[in-house]
Amino acid sequence: MLPTKEQLIQYLSDKMTNQDIAKIYGTSFQKIIQLIKEFDLNPDELRKVNNFTVYEHWLDGEVVYVGSGVWYRCRRYTNRRNSVHRELMEEGKIQYKIVEEFEIEEDAREYEVLLIDKYKELGQAKFNKQIH
Image: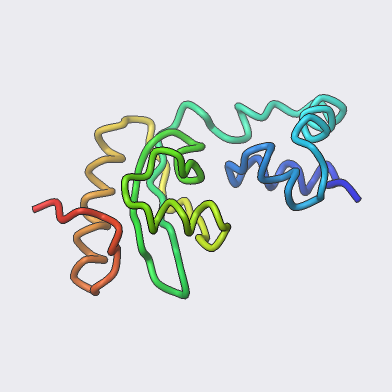
């Protein structure tokens, strides 16, 4: 079973990678690329790749990390400094939530800091370093 056009549009709009979509359907990312072409979709447009995102990583109902960056950054684990965080991501135990998008990177960074402060006050965001 492969995703429908509507499902693929939703996944791309949710900024999922082709690999993540393929994993859901037990297929290859090349097959997902082929479907994108067949459905005549523009993944860059759907993912809004020129925007900067602020995202949260959730584990067991709590925010464990707040970050910002380009559209795929929230799912990339290879550049995580904290080994526990990286392992949880590799094992697929982290849920990703994009909470805001900005056209200007500095605006995204400022919002990221506000969220980190908010979650630190709640005793969450344990994988974020203290900013202040």
